[in-house]
Every structure is written in structure tokens, then in C-alpha cells.
Length: 284
Image 1: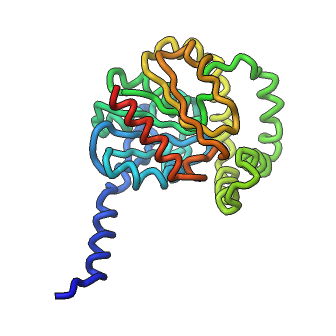
Image 2: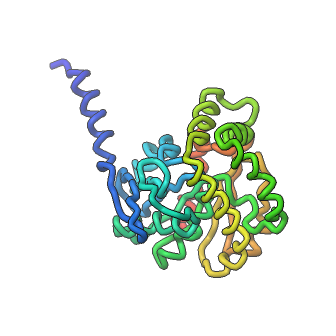
């Protein structure tokens, strides 16, 4: 009997949909509801943590690939995406609480924390709240230089002044500058418009606290006994040798010719490099 192709395709679609749980909610320690999603199964669990003024959908090209072999978790910090926003101060520590709350809610005992941009700082904090359960930290276009002694408060004030006076247009231009000139125009437009429409109060609180956290980074890193990895673009040079002065070990994989949102700019290449990184972590 000739197979029903439509029925076969329908089964494939349903199988793909079944990999994702219904959107879940957990409360962070301060009572804010944090929205997260779980896909696939397998150990270790990969917890994908988004960047400044983004949300969990920025990992949409990684979820289908990695959920084939691992438990994949994505989440929105407080003030982002579908999560609650009734928080007075959006610090790296509070975002780290959000990540830890999700990991605890799922009772995950072996995790790799993967953070893009500001998310690289967040996973550093989250790892301190999940002792013995984090195998490694993977920064996505963030760990070029773990300890930066050059960027001063005066420079930060000068940099953020336009954001306070004209948030939407300033963020739009800032985001576009993180892409290379030959980047996909549709992707640039989507990311720039999305991030520039973020709540100003949340975004600027997070931005200021991100800088404050970076000023304490050398001290913070002394409390962390974990290997660090990076999958980064060559938009900014990665100083691996200097980073190894501050952490247990540091390894980087570089995507040449791409910008800050490399996991969306070339998902196939990014996923390949991330898979190599995960395999190295699991192998160790």
C-alpha cells in the first residue's frame, strides 16, 4: 500500500513539537516570575542565557540542533521577554538568581552555562550559586578580555549619555555597529529594532550594573574554580593568554568574518564550534 506522505509529515511535525515542554514559570528569590522553556533530553543540560535587552528567542537556531542530544534550557531574565519586571535594580547578581532558580526548579545536577554578551557575566554569577553542578562556562562573544582595567567610569558615563537622552535611536545605532557591513540586512533590522524597543529603565539599570560588576571581576574570578570557554567572532581580538592569568583554564574558538550576534548570523558554523566546545568539556 502506498504510504500517506501527508500523514508521515504530520507525524514528523508532531514529534518535533513534542521536544518542547510548555512554557514554565519559576519564581526568583525576590518573587519575580521567570519564564523558561525546556527541550529534548540528555546530560549534561545546556542552559542558554541571553544578552542585554534580548530574550530567549535569540537562541532559536541552537534549540533544534542541541536538543537532539542534550536537555536544552532557555529563559528570560526578569524585565525581559515573558518574565516579570517588578524589580527595582537589575543587577548581574539578580539575573544570576534567575538562572539558578531555573536550574534548581529542574533539579539539574550537571549543566553547562552558555551566555551571550552580558549573559557571560550572568553565568559567572549563576555558577557561584550552583556549587558542584556546573561543568564549565561558555561565553558567546563576551570573554575577549575577562579583566578590563582600561574602561573607566568616566568613559562609561560618556558612552551611556546618549542612551539616557534618546534611548531608542542610540540603542538602534549601537546594535547596528555590532554587525559587519556585509551582514544580512533583515537580521540587522530585526535585532536593532527589537533591542531598541526594550524598556529603558530595565536596560539602563542592567547596563550600569554590568559595568559595576566588571569592576569587581578580578576578585569574583578568584572564587570560581571552573574552566572557561569562548565562541567568539573576530570583531574584537580575544586575549586568551591574559585570560588564563585569572581562571582555571581558558579556550577560545573564533568565527572569522562575523559580528556580535554570530549564533544568528551563521548558525551552522556557530553550532559546529559550540558542539566542539561541548564535546571537549564532556570529554574532560
